[in-house]
Image (cartoon, rainbow, N blue to C red; front, side):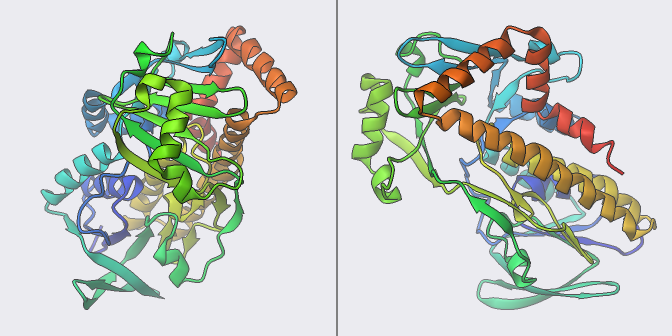
Length: 397
């Protein structure tokens, strides 16, 4: 490795998994995080089989499984009639060590990794460190950041931008983040209420149609995530208010409407992608590089897949291979972001939120045909579990 080192901007799931894989391989890493501590972020809560397989070797998967809820079956459900389309992930048991979705808050992973990295001699984990800008040169990058109001300068061989959707690294380079915003915002509430006692045949993950609306319910270890969309033209602040939130809950379970809302978030849904992920010695991954609808839970997972791919390409370069090897990282992960993750998550977005009766009938028939045909069922789940996108990635040269 010589005296090469890596600086990662952002201590989210992708940044910290990359940091861990690099220090495990002997690379000195500095992580700059603008927040004062690891946020207890409720944004993502689904770990897919392909991701758990990647985390297995480091012992991270088993710890997360202990902290989360294993969901081997999930469903689409019509609330009024109780009609169901159930997907059973047991059919994937020959291609993954984890034939299930794991419902677990993303901060369980980031906190676990931060604790490990804080004890690792090759890692410097700096909080309250706000990236300002970077200057690239032939042998590395000079980073300027602020910590506790004071300016700091850092020399690094490589910089990884893992600082999320509003990436300051991306902005400092003036890079275009092309794409569009989906028309509907998403509201997620966290409640500690036994919805399974109120809704027959509820599973760990449920995408549900009401007559002219939709909701989803996902079970965590000791709570449920309840997601809905605001009314047309409704302000986000109004949609998040107790009165409106409780009215949405009441449509699903009148008994749950009075339950304390433990957490609430809103998400503006973007579909965007950088034109390239590699800019000299500054490399992009995760939400800093690409965004997609959260429908289907692919965002955090694809960021972790970016981290694995980047580690696989950067480590040989650090050992002396031609840096052009990183162009393959760019080709692989941009292709997967655009043609797999964005495509599938956009399909999920449209399917979940459709309200027009005839279009719903067509979607429902398609879902029933899929779950009743073993080959189609398995093919659908290979996509949903992100196993097929990982397989496809390996074929891109």
